Amino acid sequence: MVVLGLGELSDAVHERERLGEVRERELALQGAADLAPALGRGHASQYDARYAPRVGDFSIRTLVDTGAGSELELHGRTINPQFLRMLRTIGFDVHWERGEGAYLYDTDGNRFLDMLGGFGLYNVGRNNERIRAALHEALDLELPGRVALGITQPAAALAEALLERVPASLGRVLFTNSGTESVEAAIKIGRAATKRSRVVSVEHGFHGLTLGALSANGGPAFTGRFAPLLPGFSSVPFNDLDALDAELRGEDVAMFITEPIVGHGVRLPEPGYLEGAQALCRRYGTLFCVDEVATGFGRTGRMFACDHWGLEPDVMTVSKALSGGYVPIGATLFAPKVFDAVFDSMEHALSHGSTFAPNDLGVVAGLATLHELETAGLVERSARMGELLLERTRPLVERYAVVRDVRGMGLFWAIEFGEPGRSPTWRMLERLQPGIFSQLVVVPLFSDHRVLIQVAGHAMNVVRALPPLVLSEEDVDWFAEALDAVVARAQRMPSAMTRFALKAARAGRGRTPKVPARR
Ligand SMILES: Cc1ncc(COP(=O)(O)O)c(C=O)c1O
Image 1 (cartoon, protein in one colour):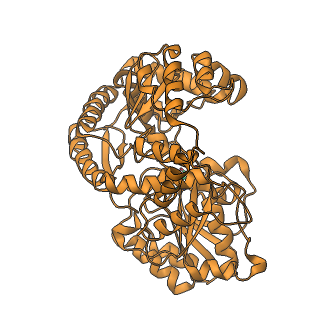
Image 2 (image 1 turned 180 degrees about the horizontal axis):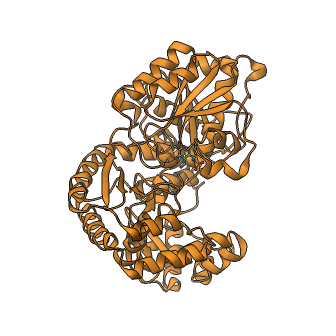
């Protein structure tokens, strides 16, 4: 079994080091240490051994140091002024300095609990040292990189490692650079393989923001302004097998695509739903595609969410946490008969791909991430911490009339709010901006308790968490106590909060700037 396929490669580099072909590492580290005092930061010593020396006069560290403090203004000028405006309105315009595990630190040294995890990217924790070491090692190996017309070792090793862990129905791996690209590949290959053009997804599902994936997104929040989308796409309510049956019965649907847990609102599947959907797909010759971009790699307390129900999909998409948050990479996994129906001859050997996919560093980080998830027991930890999180937060349903539900699976967690009795203030605020109450929870969690978290979707009173799986019991306590205090205050809807809501709504010209709700 391949765990970390760099082993033999590592032997080779040691031999080359012995022969003097690789730059002297000690000199390198000495160079980095010499630079450390110039950094002038409180934790400069932590940098000493981490950084390779610069070559010539190009230095990222100098760039970071000289640019420190100006990044918000620079972003606003060069990237996305509206995003900066939104951050400023809700008080998220912090100068971030570093990340570690489940924490983020600002330039004043304040520690924040990261319950957002970069939209569920950092399953192994931010700046995981084992992933970082593997990347350093790979860089030192001077691997060939993309040969394009050639095959290199790490990608095949990661493909094998993935196939050893996903449901047995899957047998081919097509690498991509992101979640949305993985979905694009699923749609494109799925339609060609079945020679059908229709795709069915679920209402409020989220699969990415490029045009094909966007067409499968089951809600107007993302699609509204970008019509016309691809033809032949329709959606059915999640957890509704009758509606799915009605769509598939005509035997003209290429693929049914669903997240196992609908991220928008964190909707969990009812017992039997996913198995039933798979059975319907089999009956009508439709490919069953499970989008595990958000739920994969331990998020729900199993390596893949499919494992909870013993699903055997024809297509599966992954990305996000695969590379430990370091390097963009994704993959679409296919049942061999699906893939081979399209890649069916030498002439069609390059039917789909992307210049950068697979990139060596993403692949190396992927191998190291699988190794880390397993050796550090992070999948089990996700299950355990998820249970604890529910145990500590479910009592809020009894304690506060405004809390409707607390739910989750592993470390995919959500709390849902609803009108507490008859409340004119609630109604006024909801008329102003549907879903605003959840922002009255998210904002003080950040400003008063240093907890970073997000709203789970547009115009909905659901807050969700996708923290790094390295979360500790103390972190769960930190979060649960902060949440309790914030909900207690928000439920009273004091005038300071309603003023904030009104100000935010005005700043957004009638639309409240949102804590990013997507993904
Ligand atoms: C289930 C799911 N699919 C696809 C995507 C798109 O991934 P990416 O943002 O890498 O394009 C996301 C992103 O959040 C997702 O949650």
